[in-house]
Image (cartoon, rainbow, N blue to C red; front, side):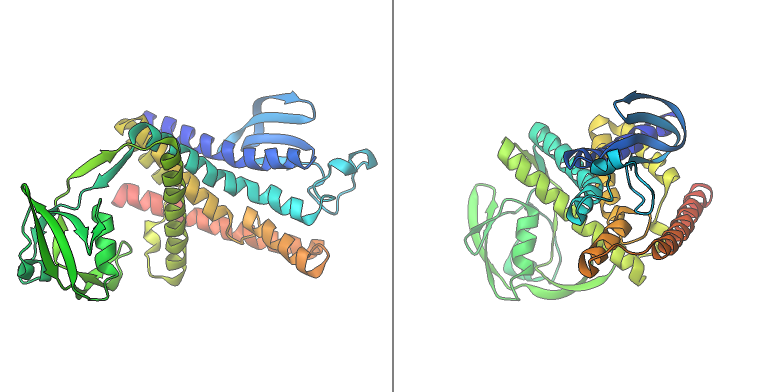
Length: 355
């Protein structure tokens, strides 16, 4: 339990810090005055005031905020502070300040992946055959266990992912598959067949396959700094895309809402990753950082995405949304978040006590 709590505090602290740092740095870049930079909500526990900014740790560690001068468009501002006011900045600058929080969460993931890939390289699943399904195209062509696929239609194959991608895009056309069997290189002609399989969301999809499974052998590939940077950006993009698709499928009802977790689930997973080692915990932080970034872009009032929606409307109509509309939207957003929090807490407790 102690490990879980400590790991949870570390994970949440890092995520909140980078999120709020994004808002803070871009606000200062555009000359907006920042009155408070808080990790956590509620009463101030301790901190230090530097210039006009109070850097503080607050009592409730489930979020954070940056309080800028002139955030409320209706509030009266000292004429001397107008040049430092958030509201008085051009709408494009306000959009960038608000978007910087979730974007910094995505940037954090890129930085973490870059460090991991630079130090450890990437682990690649070898295109080595584990099992051949009887009666499949691969079986009929003569492929067997432990064959290592090295090329398909003269295209080099380095990983199982490379091989699966080529087969999936074959449109059922016959493929020239080069394999290494022992010291021999053998060419087979295999015609993929269309088959119904389950994707990672449990949905049934049709895909071209040849009827083989992986042996599970992996190897580590060293990356230079440029390759590590490229791979970290690609990895962040893929996970971001997967997160967005998952949210859409949750809304569509194609994924069970029981899979949604909250603080208790995060604490359990963080504790588990911490016990597995620092590298696992850091990788887990990167995954959560992407999720936090994506969720904050949702157009729900109170979240960054809700504020961005208001600013884009302002950009189109040429004036800010009136105070009453904003208040109603904020109240709706708060209700949505409270209901969501209650539901994830329910899921966490049900998972904890009832499996």
